[in-house]
Length: 258
Image (tube, rainbow, N blue to C red):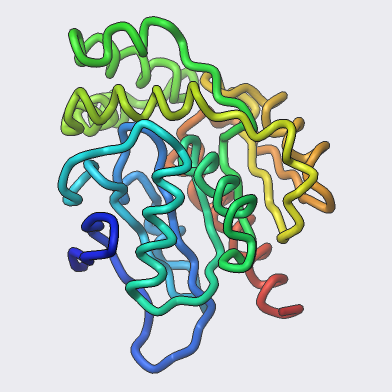
């Protein structure tokens, strides 16, 4: 793990690449008010690829500031690839990270080998209470996000850990994330995405219900849709093996036919 200084900012990464091994690179991009630790071990250790899990600016161990536009987070990822001399990568994004992955595929297509869009949408509506109270009452918002992110019946420890993790993010960074999400709308441009695309939705997602995943699949040419049962918005932690298997099989196909 290391802090990488780029032309735009510094980004903390967990770098799973093997030196001198030209494996395809997978970049894991977390969601709003998240960190690289939101990814399951199964996804961080995908076989036959070099996985880089990032802390977006202002998150985890990456220094402030955060961003208020998806386009700026996308530019940060490109700057990271430039610094690491990675010409092209597979982008895997959860929630806000999925919006960033879409922006990367649309605005930097030559740098993107494929995108996996997990529990995300082409438009990401944000509840007014999240935007209104993210700074003034962060604990309230953290509890709301947790309640809406996990499937009914999730264990108490997972819920507590989720809330605690959100509270580690600076309130202004969290607010900026949701401003970025609210301002994102890729719906008019989805048919411009021509890289291999995997869409993974959750049957019980309260933040971005299944219709958002279905819309992505219906409007991105030749995309693949997988719907995960018994999972909510945090499906990457609720059903880690199922999600990791879906991503692994999809990545294998990209590598096979590259």
